[in-house]
Image (cartoon, rainbow, N blue to C red; front, side, top):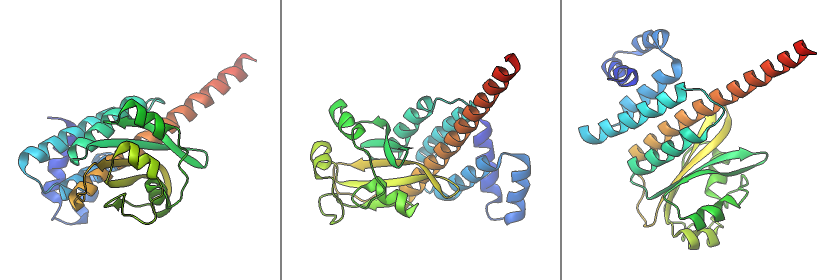
Length: 232
């Protein structure tokens, strides 16, 4: 049994026992892992088999987060695949910031042509984009039907991708949106509150990984500067 699954069990046992017991767990474990486990314990209302699949996927992501590296792709690819499958979506994207815009970082389920099309779009924080709305509002945003939403302006992308119902969730580090997960269906069928909550759990994990990667890169850069100064 993984350490995270054991922690999730502990969180379930104390979920109704008050904040003091949760604080006791925080003293014994990493705060981010306790918060993720608590979110999972409170959000997974599905049957045992589905709940186990969710726990297993999240435990795998947490293991990857613990393997600190400046390369995010080995974590982002399985994350968007798990997020897409477990939310019963057909396709998924992850967008990361690039200056003042957001660009596609990785995809699941999309054709190479559509992935290349999306990769060529610099997404601005505007309501004409789903990602833009998520960045502006810093919360999950769902578009029930991309063809019927009056503010959605990506007609060419919709035609190429055939998507209808979409949801985007932010990866938050404090108040900063350090990325966005987007999943969609090619039919009009709303994502449930439980599914959006699960996507938010994956986004929380990704935000931790991004923060760890940044710290790793900053530490490496500082060490390289120190080495160069010493050699000089």
